[in-house]
Image (cartoon, rainbow, N blue to C red; front, side, top):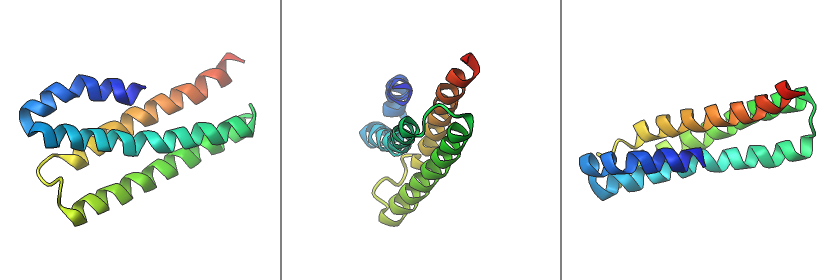
Amino acid sequence: MAAAVAWGLLAGPIGLVWGARGVLAAGIAAAVCVIPGWCVFGLLSFAGGERQSQAMGVLAGTGLRMFAVLVAALAVDAQGWLAGTAFAAWLVVFYLVTLLVETVLVIRPASAS
């Protein structure tokens, strides 16, 4: 949800500078960063509420997201179809947004108990 909000707030300025391809590039970057986060929360739902399981989940999520971002960056660079859209910059922006949100959501319940 946070990535969608960030993308929505940035879509206008992105469209003005990079056009429709830039908005598409930012949307793809957001999706590449969000999907591993969903996987992590799916795994954490099976892990229970133990702090060690949560810490391993955050670590696994960071690694999974980093792998997905790396593969996406290499694939887009190899294809070249989003050249000139600042795709790598959008990957960094949405990577940081999703990492922040995931960390807050995982840590907050643990600190409340």
